[in-house]
Image 1 (spheres, rainbow over the protein chains, first blue to last red):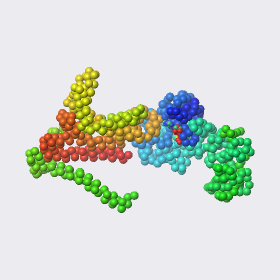
Image 2: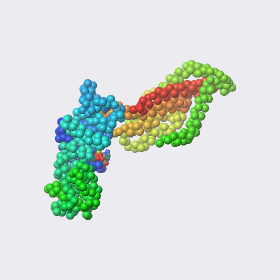
Image 3: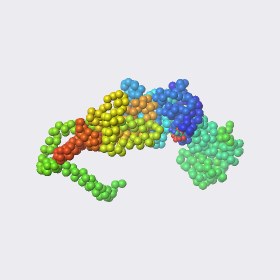
Image 4: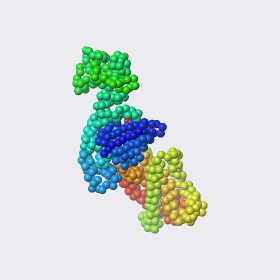
Length: 334
Length: 288
Ligand SMILES: Nc1ncnc2c1ncn2[C@@H]1O[C@H](COP(=O)(O)OP(=O)(O)OP(=O)(O)O)[C@@H](O)[C@H]1O
Ligand SMILES: [Mg+2]
């Protein structure tokens, strides 16, 4: 079981309030991802749940029991750190066995669990090496191994893949997702990688300056962002946010259109502009279009190859059903 | 990049320094070796060839030689034990966020700047004096009979004095080592259910092992030649005669340079045995 409830949890460092009172429920078995810009308090929130930081106010409940004052080891949570935080003088086997040893588990059971974790994570070949002799991906797996042997109520990950190269990241992403399917344990995952958030999460929590901007499934956030911040944050490339005369016909202060919801044409369309940078990837084509009287270019994404290039005049037609309207207060209009 | 050219240039540039060092080391060593096979007693005016190994045999077969070696090892070992354990404890303490951290750290290093002679005299007269010393007063305050430190427990007293001088050194090196410990590692151990004591033994101590070997190595080299502290406190009496002190007595007090030189060579050999032993230890620790 691993249902985590945050009830008006608040955190200040000295005078600075990093997290204003915040409510959040993480259901048992859910994969929850915290995203947000750098410094918005993702790590702090995770460390509050872990118990590595004391809350300044509010309550944390784990499976209904108040865990606010419970020390980290007793909360039954396991954490995987960005720097892996392996013990450098211990072999992989000893690293993974460490939490079990601290729990005074007998040796036979300990060995069985370590072996099991090593099998799941493909660590058997280097089980007697030290962390210093492993690659980044292997180290990350050891760190995950050390977390799963404890059979925790929930896993906490703080940007576990940010030290890996792009290819490895894709692989590890799948492995973690698979692990979640297999263990069906609650996972709380911090990242600032769009793709990780969208592909792994059951539920995404978007944070800004310690405030939850929106909670929802990845597609929820994609289709119906609650406000301008979420609209601009979720999705890659970013949603085009247009104001002024382009927004007026829609009775909104700002309208947002995703790059993939604009159809380009060389001859006719609602808006017109000149192509700036164009990126031809084969599978997709991205155009950055400069429109008269606008500072920021509009980004559009067309499937496949499109034969238009820098300097060409281009006509754009937004998909009327996919236009997001926002009011003067930045909130979504129905 | 070390090209052929830059390498030979470097060699030329370094040559004078290497030459100076060689002369610096070799001349005294060769002189000592030479004296050690002579019957050289300046006061009697004898300077005669050739004793051969006579001086060595005489030096080694005297009972004071064995005593001196045992005393040396006990003294060095005792000081190392106190400074390393004390250093670790102090370093752990200084690593905590405390009020006035900067000043406390400067105060801790202070004993290291006190000259050994002065330090020993201060301890001898201010602390360990059986009538007026602070320790005597402390003992009296608790109703105990004051100890006459330098006559009743002379070796231990000297160990305390020298440990006091070297404790700051050990503390400082170990403190920097503790500060370089990754805080996420400690947090991971905390989440893994390790108690503070388990964290110390499983995480902090292994992390410090390298710094500890460095402290032991450097201190041993200096501690083998302790002299001033013995000279001004017990004068080598009451079983505090180390090998260094014995050599001094043979040369200055008995005016037998030949015999003293033979003792000096024994000291060199002892130091080398210890050094090889320590280098092995350090080497093993640094490989990790
Ligand atoms: N120990 C601390 N003392 C004071 N301020 C802190 C402390 N830890 C974090 N902060 C502040 O809290 C805010 C949130 O930090 P946090 O580490 O949670 O950000 P984050 O969302 O994880 O950012 P990133 O994506 O860069 O990791 C930051 O403004 C940071 O300066
Ligand atoms: Mg962070």
